[in-house]
Structure formats: structure tokens, C-alpha cells
Image (cartoon, rainbow, N blue to C red; front, side, top):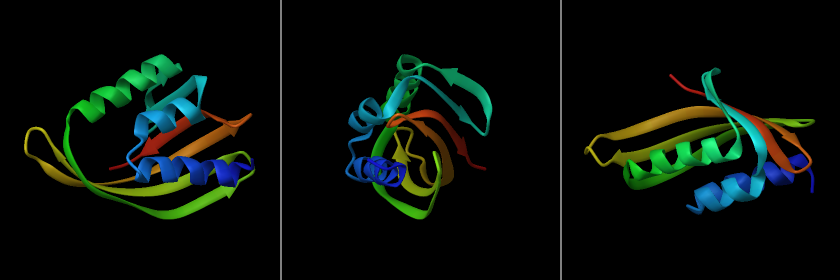
Length: 115
């Protein structure tokens, strides 16, 4: 499967609300992830726990939208907008760009850029 199709499969999984299932299927064991290229998290287990903690703080997902998707070789960038209410009652519209590096059908690095 091409990187473009793999990126689309990740997008489709997230839009269907299958966040952890998508993570399990498309992220490498040694994946490195970061927020704004700081505080790198190394390894699938560490990053999966980070995702679980984030999801545990969400009261309701109102929607998600994808903007531009750029694929260049083994690299991809996806613009995301999320409308979320957290358990503390705070409703936010989050925008971020996920920059991914792929190898052998798995994401080996993903950096989330947001304000």
C-alpha cells in the first residue's frame, strides 16, 4: 500500500472514532512523537498511554475535519481541526498539523504543530 493510501487510512480511522485501533495498526514500535517538536515521547507503549490520557480527559467529540493533506515520498502532513468538550466543561476548537514520517507501512515519527 502506498504512503498516500496509508495516510488516508489513518485519517479515516480517526474520523470514525477508532483512534486507538488506528494507532495500534499504523504506528511503529519505536515511534517518536512530539508536540511542537519538544518533549519527545519515544516508543509505542509510551505514546499509546499518552493518547489514552488525552482521550480520558475528553467528555465529547463534536467533530473533526481534515484540511490539506500533503504526501511527499515517505513524509506526510495533515491539517486537522477538532471540536472537543473536555471533562472540565471547556469546549475548544483545536487546529494542528500532524507531520509524519513513514517506513515499512508504519509511522516512525509524528510531530504535532499547534498554537
